Image (tube, rainbow over all chains, first blue to last red):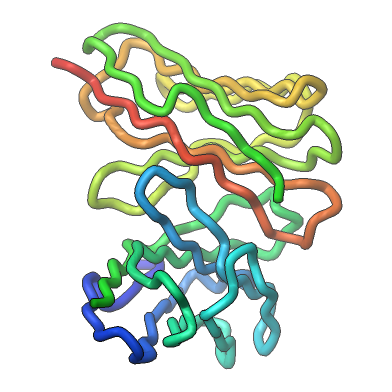
Length: 114
Length: 114
């Protein structure tokens, strides 16, 4: 079954700790994305990667880091520098394009930092 | 940062009624417009990706139109059913932005009353 998996579904962390969210896809997609959703807001782009070993900052990259060592995997680290990390995080992937190809989304991870 | 507006924010419709809602985006430098359906506890799923002014796309009872010159897209649902209850997101791709990066609106939350 092809798709995108994110783990865990729920994550709880203490303030000041870094935490890594997992995203794996077996769709053979070149491009992968991380979005954040807060109540009443749309999806905001954190980071994206169009090819292995390359990634670009999105609109709200501060306090986050990513890596893209394998085509299938695009983990997101929420660092202690992120001022308001509690949110719902969605990972997506697409075939490489110019923004005219649909994105496929994972089930999301809800992160709570106290 | 580009502004993608969706209206209304939420909508309650009687089962069997038809409905529509709007996505507004900058009319200059248009490249593509995406529509996604996001059901509760599921992942967002693509409905349409539209690239040409005047495009009309249809999937079952759902259809969408695109006017790139005035910067809007309409999503129509004919004969609403309870399974249409979801948040509908649109996303805009600007021609001059980095490949693959799209900007999401905050969504229209549709509830169907049986």
